[in-house]
Image (cartoon, rainbow, N blue to C red; front, side):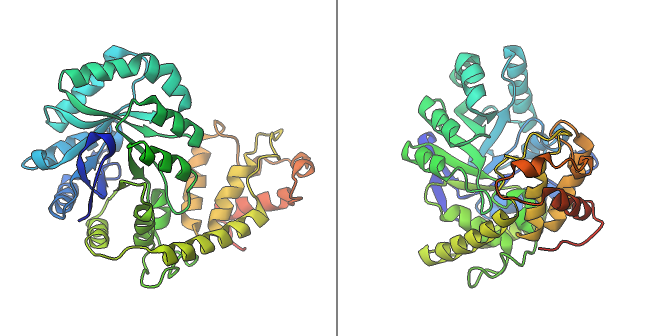
Length: 373
């Protein structure tokens, strides 16, 4: 197992971390018979970092991690999160509950959950940081860190604040938008922990567009993990493992000496550029078609459709579309809300036949027809 130093924390951590967000469930409770052996297998294989949060697995993840830590506590770096930004009493209650559920006297990595540029200025800077510093002074947490959901400008602001020893953020083969900010964090000795290295599961399934891109790597999850950790500015890939097979595959990937070299990265870049050009022929996601009189979220629909017909993520796109339908209209409406007014096509710089493609997208994403490129 390969190890790195986690930024200013000085902690020596495995380059593969265990994300305890997708543990096997039995209803609203984690299945202990499956989860505990998985976590222990990872520990035995050299993984020494595990990450959880208050709300993961219907608020049961922290409890299972606590059970798994018995006999291992002094060898494992424990990371969890606090999502309370407004009320100090609630913030302390979350911390106390986390300590109790994890069955630990202190938490190594304590993250403000989901910081962005706005919450950094309006919440963390004004009050939350003071609460966490009090907790650190009392020995209840060791390092103040954060998980992050925003763009490069906000990421630079988070780094420049000097508040955090490490940042957990999204980065993978399909989403490389934060590469500049990741490099900036590394330059400033901030540990970079990558969540979602397999794209929220999208890179966990067979895919013709990405299979065998790099000679000798046939499995997409292996390619995805190797890609993330080939970035010299990344400290760790945090994999949300939900089966023993995933644990074994990930351990196998990181216990061998194979690495992606410059030639491999060039091949990957060329393939991703080719796929991106194909996707842009359909829709580059510029958003000029908005707003729609019926609030149809055209860019999001086309992004899902492109993930299916260009990148091969049909199953995942259909699942995402179905989940979105349950939550409408908070993020716009789906393609069947279109009334064929044509306002979007007048604004589209690519002159895409949006109305026709919306119908095609809805037919496919609703599971009625197969996908055609």
